[in-house]
Length: 476
Image (cartoon, rainbow, N blue to C red):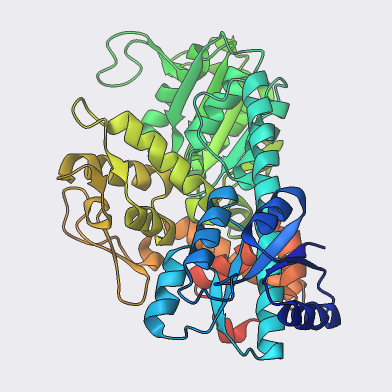
């Protein structure tokens, strides 16, 4: 357990504090002067410092304590420091906090309050150290992955995204069909590019098709090609996407929006590896690695009869699920900094994202995911009048309650649509899935979260976002 360092020149006070902390199971070290205190901070595992403001009998102005506080913060900025002082005015307390103190307590102190405060500070230090260790561990893991594979310039810092990318490069060298799921704008296309870049087909064609945007009358010609004269306006031979991607990879985006007729035709070529151009009886062979993507819950669509189960199993040998940006907040600032660098034009290279803007980015819900973040950063570069980007420049403003509301975004003055209008197919199916899993888990949130592959906190966030009322949540 981390130790508490008491910096106090009066032996009686040191003894009282040592006994108090010992009763509460808190290991204690004593330093009678600032020099000894700084020496112990560098040599011992200190969880918190409890320091007086004066260390000489004739000193009453607190200058020695203020200097020690500054020295501690320069030595270890994250080390919690609790000030013990007889100066209990609001102005004095505010000044101490501004200078880096975590809290202050007046002499004479309340034993229980002091012990509780110190325990909380030590726990905060332990959590900070654990977070630092995990961040360092995560950085090493990301660095090693980027050194071994081509990540196509992907920027991320979250463990959630690292798990997805790790699985993507692991399965890239096989020819197994991959289904990439996740909300619009989250990065499904980039993940498909990463799979291609690390596959045995990386030097072969990578052909992208918006499958859900193809009307039935054009679908067959787009995917399989058409002979000259096969339909009105077809004056010359048209090579289809399967033929174009032969030997390489075909990426079918928005597969969940494919019509029933389109699903049947796609299934046929996946089963046989053969196709015929529109207007021809000649059979052609195709050798493609198929990657598809959707923002829809295909399992739910199958239950509703909107998607073929046999096609689903052809597409989904490996599933890669990209979390929404709001569910991986560690990625927000690194992405914002990267996008700022990309969008900053000559003469604007010195732009920085201010602290209030960084907080606004973290507080916002990001219904448009990475694509929306990109747009907002681009907007900020264009409208920022100084060198520091503000929430207003991003089209985000802090409300009185500490939340974030949207202001003008892009060229439109309208705010983003309500949550129930954003990506309805994804949100509705996600809500259904979560409610079903919660029912199967008999209301135990931790069990449901494990089944969904989420942390308990992430599941709670999704429940709030999707309107699963807090008062209806069973305890878990």
